[in-house]
Length: 314
Image (cartoon, rainbow, N blue to C red):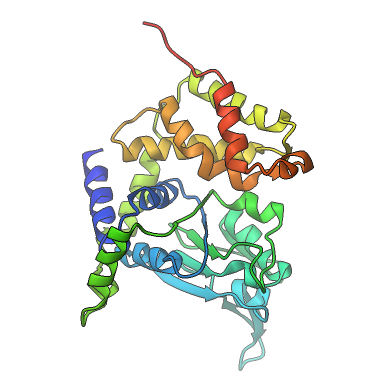
């Protein structure tokens, strides 16, 4: 545990050289890394979505590829294709997704057909091309960025695609003080991104991911998560609540948050902290909720307040 804490602290300090004043966002990103989960970063242009992903990739000694999604990107650009070689035999050419860290930049600017090419990749960590399945390298993490869906030239991600993302996070604008710090760093001759080097190996990441799986979840905590997910399915303000995949993601995220806090067991506060990033992007608001101007976060907050928190009496 001490070795993991030292590595996670080094990762946070390294990323903080570029991403200023967003410690909570960085911790969520590291939680997803520990839990082998993919992340959707949704926010307006220019707040540092791509910078955050690149900073994490530079902090890990893992292979990294960036896919700039545009309307003309095809599924074969992502998963690869087969073509005749000089000898006439069919040869497979891997696509851009064959990397340990994949940045899917502006994922909602490509067509739904191309977006669907990531479904198998994200869930099974493999790609099937012309009937042949190719495993992806480990660790494997997809970091996707997108602008809000009401922006020009965007395609909304289908529910099945959204459900594949372990969590959705938003960066937000910096405070005036943090923005002054950012300006001071970027007005020099050396870009802050050039000061970042790898502080963690792929083997370290795999070791920490294995450690997360050993974090203890008591029956009371498991029941708390099950009751919370059931409440989302019965809410009159949601036409689509949390799936079983979402419940599994929530307990995984709670395990990851416990490791970040230096614990080997989950407490209800872990569940409550992870519930928003893990569940809200999977919800579909009802017409009544939209008419009332409610958000997914407001609905979830009301549901959390109505689910009894487990307390173990000594």
